Amino acid sequence: MSEQTIFQRPRAAARRHPAHPLVTPEMWDRIDSILQRHRNMRGALIPVLQQVQQVVGFLPPQVQQYLAQGLGVSPAEVFGVATFYAFFSLEPRGRHHCKVCLGTACYVRGSNKLMDNLTETFGLKKSGGTTADLRLTVEGVRCVGACGLAPVMIVGEDVHRKVDVVQLPEIMKRYE
Ligand code: FES
Image 1 (cartoon, rainbow, N blue to C red):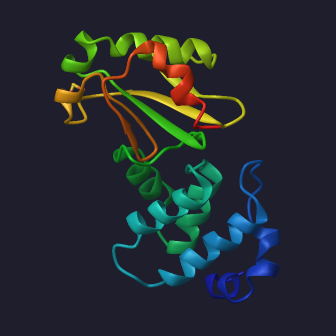
Image 2 (image 1 turned 60 degrees about the vertical axis):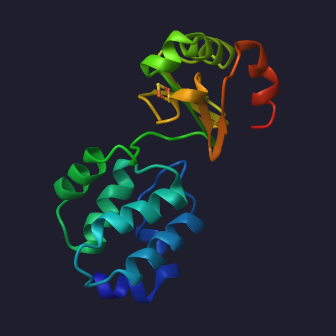
């Protein structure tokens, strides 16, 4: 089937969508719309990956393959870009993304204790990860540029400053 046919008949094309348990038919439709908007556009790969990640939450291999086909580039190119930039994720992420700053200023003020508490509470590896119910992704990050507020933790768009470990249960209740 030609690329044109795929985009002109998104519903019929749904049969051709690769199977992935976390990518719904609605998501595939939105992916088709994103591809359609970027057809024949130079330098489309990064914006397409960004928009598709907003839809799906991450970039699994099946989606990468589909985007490569839709954009007429090689799967290796898609994979190369998706793994080069830190803001792309190849693994599922939780609904809430919690970044604990492990930079020096935060570390000496106890951010490692925040990390330990969060990973123990949510049953994650010491280095972080994503909960099985996709509620939360915890990640240790380098200095986020707010050292005067150490220790700093960022959840989604919220910056939590001078966080004490005893505050964590109350803070995390906001992110169900
Ligand atoms: S070390 Fe944490 S904000 Fe700089």
